[in-house]
Length: 342
Image (cartoon, rainbow, N blue to C red; front, side, top):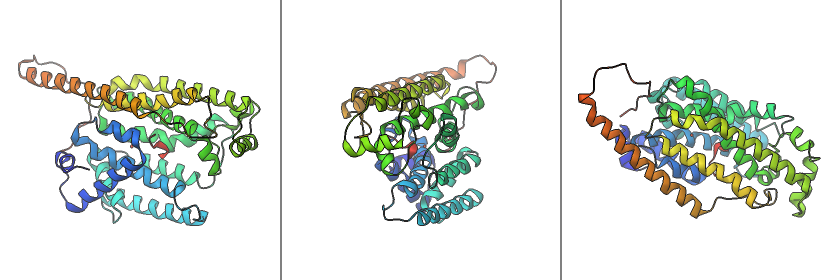
């Protein structure tokens, strides 16, 4: 995290600044898509986003990315320690763990409900024992904690031009859409971890089960039944993006380019998977650097436009006639993740 970002956010204590630096590093290393999009936010809001996503990434690492030789009980113990540190950090506003310290500071600054983090940790705990989901409804239940609450955590930081409760369902849907995109992209890698996130009823409707996926992964051979199931999962994911889309214009105008950029890049995962012929069982699909750069350039242009408009409104404000108060907007002080970020 640059000193400019921290200064703009009013983060002054050396230990706290170092904690935010740690979160930024986690976000930059693991979440290339969202890290890129975050750079389109106003400078003073970026540290909070890094804190939210850094924490989510750290918890996800405990579940998924520790040394493969780590036993399940060791992962569970590490997650329990994080849960304890989180509870204490949210209660007191402080923590010995740098990532939790930054998170607790962000939660306090933006008034983020603590329940979102309890729900998130419950989903992380489920990943230690749950290896598949019988139905899409079961998967959505899991994703409330693993993805939807990430969108809800972000809302106070991004700000809205409507009552926050009106924007919340769309923010939650966007978190789910991002995660569904990751599930589709990571089918093969998740299978190697012993997990299948595609619902069993969707797979079964096409004659697919875990054994067939495993055979395809091990042999490198395709099967039209798997392709059909993946295509249906992609269509389901696109429907969730449509559910999320109205929320983009409910955000603070200066925050929209960030989320719109992430929206386009994550949606691009679905396009890339289709272009690759739904071969995600065998290899991970990526959005090209050229495409990332083009979308980021468009986002930057939107940032400039939004800021010019904001300055224009500010200049006209003194001569404006008295009127009703503006729509509610979050005050600005001073996210695997599965919500990873591609």
